[in-house]
Length: 156
Image (cartoon, helix red, strand yellow):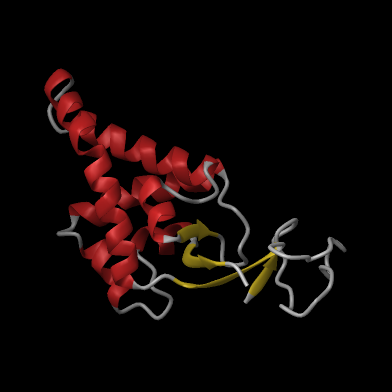
């Protein structure tokens, strides 16, 4: 699939301009998306875990144990997905992006709901994360609740 870089509308990779908004496609204007596989998502999540490990440890000592790490995890995933083009540092490193099914960005309210459900996905023996291994669209529980997809980002 290919999407217009201007409006996010699905567009043919051969199109010279977007049929929805008329934006010229040009080089790099279209981005193609394919579902990110389980292991790529795992690698991105592992990188994010390692990035948050020390700050979480410090917050758990200075604030109520366990609560500081949860708040940091929620805030990190909410704000990064909402305001950094659907990516956390780990997601950007492995080349994946969270977006709506049509390729449009995730708004802040939806990103907050996704981040909250992400905590639930982890509480149930990580089953919410492992679910992506057999889901046809490689979605976790928090992707299903927020109706988001995680795409591998490639440029044509």
